[in-house]
Image (cartoon, helix red, strand yellow):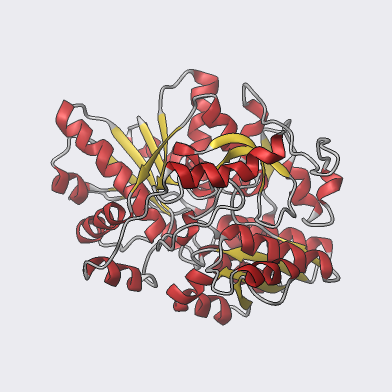
Length: 454
C-alpha cells in the first residue's frame, strides 16, 4: 500500500518565517522614492502599509521573523498542509522521476494566499486599522484576504481585474460570502480608474491598474491601509511556511529535491516553496534547481528586463528594481489571472539575476493539458495558475524519461480550480487560444520602464 501523504503534527507549524534577504550574497537593490530617487526607509511606507509589514519589507538583517501566536492559531485550521507523492502521474508519464507536490489547496480559501493574508490582517488589527484594501487577479488573493479580514474583524475592499471579475463569478461570490466589498477594475470610483476608462472605456483591466485603485482608496480613506498578495518582500516572507514544512516532510520521505518548481505571477507561492530550500544552495552548497513557470503571454522573467519600474500602472508605488515588461503592459485575457502581472518581486529578480533560479514560459493550452492529466491521475483539479507548475513538472519528468535519470521533483500546488470550471470548459471545447507577445509589443511596453531609468 503506497503512502501518499506526508503529514506533520500541528505542533510542527513553523514558529518563525524565513527571511532570505538576510543571507543573500548580493542584497536586492534599494527601493526608491520616485520623486527623490533616494532609498526608501520603512517609515516612508507607513502611509500605505501597516507599520510591521513595512518594517519586514526592508529587513535585510534578521534571518528569522517570529510568527505571532494568533496567526499560528489561525494557521492551525489548515496547516501543516500535505506533501503528496504523485505516483499515478509518474506512472502516466512513464518517468523514473519521483514527483512530490505540496498541497496548498486545502486552506479555507483554497490556495496558499491565506498564509500572508492572515498575517497582514493581524498586523492591521494590532495597529488599530479598521479598513484594508487590495487588488486581486484570479480572485485567490481577494478570497484569502476577505476571509482573514473577517477573522480579525476588519472591513475589506477588493478591486478585482475586470476580465477575471467577468470570467470567474464564483471567485467574487466567495469574497462577498466572507463579507468583502468587490469592485471590477478599472472603475469610476478612483481617479486612476477614471483616467484609464476615459482613454479606453472597454479596458479589461490589469493587476497594475487594480493596484493603483486599491492604493488610491487606501490613502484617501481614514484609518485604512493597503495590502498586497504577492511581489513584495514581506508577502514572500510569510509564504516561507510552505517550504519550511516541506523540508521536514521531504526528510520523512528520505529524499531531497533536485528540482523545485512553482508557477510565477509576482512570486508569492514560488518564494514560499523555494526560499527555505534555496538557503541550502547558498549556505551549504546544494545544487537544487529552482524553476519559475510563467505564461508565454506575460513573460517578465523569460523576456523581460531588469531595471527600476513602478509596481502599478498609474505610477503610485515606489520604484522597484525588478524584471519587468513595463508597468503599462496590457496582458491578454488568459484564465490564469493571477499570473498576469508585469513584474517580478525584488528579491526574486536579484536571485534570478545572480543565477540562483531560472524561468520557463508555457502556452495556455499546454498548461490546461497538464492540468487535466493531473486531475485524472491525482484527483485534484488544479487552479489555472497551478497548471503552469504542473506543465513544467511534466516537462522535467519527461526529460528524466529520456535520460533515465531518477531525479526528485517537488512542485507547489498553489490552489485548486474547483470554481474555475469555466476555464476548463473553454479548454475542453477546443475554443481556448494561446497568446504570445511579439518582440515589437514587448519593446513598446518595456519603453515605459526604460524612461524611468534615464
